[in-house]
Image (cartoon, rainbow, N blue to C red):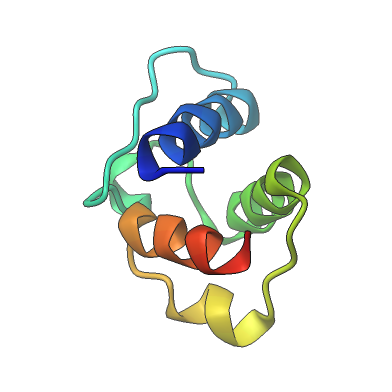
Length: 79
């Protein structure tokens, strides 16, 4: 699976979690860029990402993520 395919699936996850069809994330997207992305929704988002890609992140990895690009890198390493 390449980065483009990961982003296609990841955008769907974001749209579902945030219940907004207009969300499109990129490498530089951070929580500050998405209205409603707080620490509670972050847990829901990570759970949805893990389910979508059938992977599991350890807490150390999740805490280090600074933007969506780093999340995509973590997904690539896990699949």
